[in-house]
Image (cartoon, rainbow, N blue to C red; front, side, top):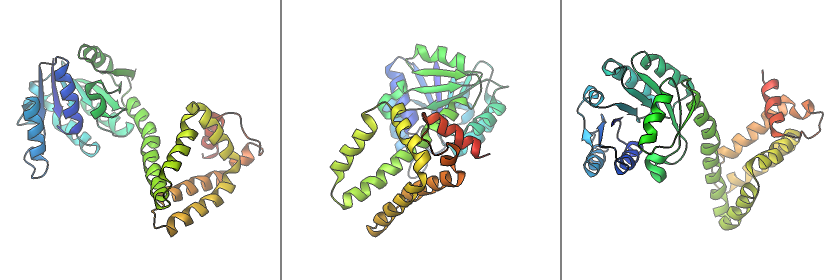
Length: 292
């Protein structure tokens, strides 16, 4: 099997490295930045290291490959699909691995799927750590065909369904937490560093979020917040004052306050007759019902 990457950045490089180690005979790459003054040298170094065949055009890449993986940037995913479609055949699989919204994946599927098999792919772990074995969720009409091929080359692929956008919807939901958590952790450690309590804070947070299964933690946090959001708005005012007076950016804490105010305005506590609900799912359902 011949694999081709549109874009040969970090993701394509690490996946290619693993694939070659696991027996894939040939990998092709095409990257418009190959002659870029800043990025070009890095791309060429990676290509040379792995002995990847560097295609000079997108057409050249596609005609030499069985599986075409687009791993560039979300903002270019749709335009690249439009450029690629004239060269694709029904014997090929086109995998879009960019972190786009489900809606964009649906649009790309509309462009691609009459020409070849389309796969919406969502990477859900760190690629450098796992290489080609990174967990990937896939959906779309080409998903079942892709998983058969991926098993032969040691990839860790899970089919969601045959609807393009489903895999990316999971990634977007997960990224809401993972990217938000990263930003919140940065803000937390910034203020704890000011007071030289980094280690204590890390130990405290670790105990709070890892001592129990996540579902139990979600039940504890969300059901109580549904009832006590208004009080917590006042608490966040004090948090923001502390950060501001310590010259620490408070954007995440401000966002937390806004989210709590949103619950207050929805009167979620009144919805539950001021009694703490039993399960976090009740809180989520209440918010979705009230915000209609």
